[in-house]
Image (cartoon, rainbow, N blue to C red; front, side, top):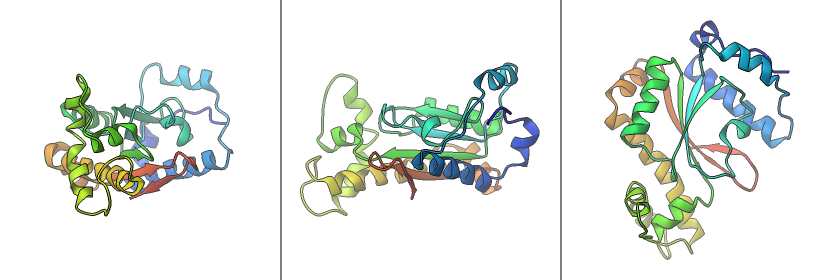
Amino acid sequence: MKNLAITKELQSAMTPNSALQDLLEGNERFVNNNTEETDNSALINQTTTGQFPKAVVLSCIDSRVPVETVFDQAIGDIFVSRVAGNFENTDILGSLEYSCNVAGSKLILVLGHESCGAVKAACDGVELGNITAMLENIMPAVRKSADEVDGEANSSNSEFVAKTVENNVLLTIERIRQKSQILTEMEDNGEIAIVGGVYSLKTGKVNML
C-alpha cells in the first residue's frame, strides 16, 4: 500500500531517469490493472505543509487521460499542467519552471494522446471563439505533418492525425527549450530531463517518443 508521501530527501535522491522510470512502471501497472492501493488519508496528512513531486506532466484536458491514474501516482507525487492540445504558453512555462526550479521536480513529460480532439480541430482549421487562437499553437505541427504524410491533410486521415499528435509533442518540447532559459540550463546541467510520449486510448499504454 502507498502510504508514504515523497519527502525532500527522497526527491533530492531521484534522478531524471529514475523519475521517468517510476512513471513508466506506474503506467505498466495501470495497463495490467494492477495499480497500488493508496492510503489517501495518510498522504493528505503528510502533504499538508509541503510537497515534493518527482515530475511535472504537461497533458491535454481530455477526460480519457486522467494523468495521475494512468501513471499510478498518488497525492504529492506529480504536478500536472493541462490544456487542450498539450502545448506550452507563458503561463504553462511559468508552471513548469516553478515545478522544476522552485519545487525540485526532476522531469518534464509532455504527454499527447491518440485521436486528440484539439489536434483534429487544428487539422481541420476549425474557427470558433477563443478556440481559434488556441489552435494556432498546434498549427506548426499540422504544417510539419503535411510535409511528411501522404493523403489528405485533415482529420479524415488517421495517419495524418497520429503524426500531428507526435509532432505537436516534439515541437512543444523544442519550444520549451527555446523559450525557457531556466529549464534549458537545468536540462544542460543534468538536473532535469524534458521528454515526450503519446498515450494510447486503446491500450492505456504511454509510448515514449
